[in-house]
Image (cartoon, rainbow, N blue to C red; front, side):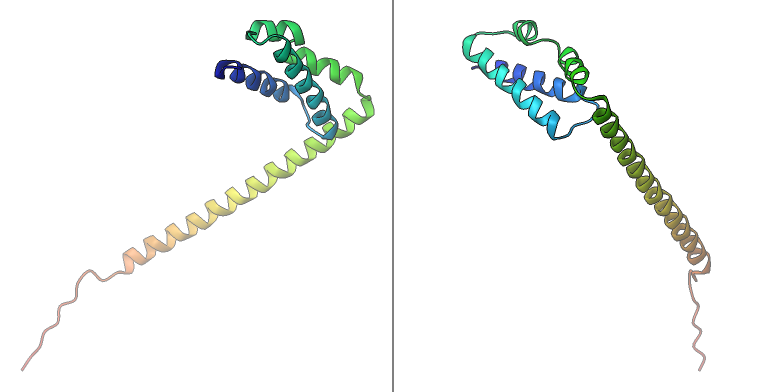
Length: 129
């Protein structure tokens, strides 16, 4: 297998993985099956192209849509809700961190300006005899 063919397989697998709305253990098992199909295809067709791969196995979005139609709706709903809650929590944590960092930066900058104004630029020392 050439480097170009290896890149085609890697990109195809990555495109399938990106199409999944959630990625759990069942999706990993499904992708393992797809990977087996890809390996069998490449073994049977050593000089394949990306068009042949897409034609034989299918478009990534079609593969994922078939999978999503076959799984239980309650399981999918539960996974999507869990993913949504995780995203909301992550966005909240990042927002709190950014707001805290901005407040700290503002306070530090104000302290810097106050210190700059209070700094004595020079002192004149007169020694008298």
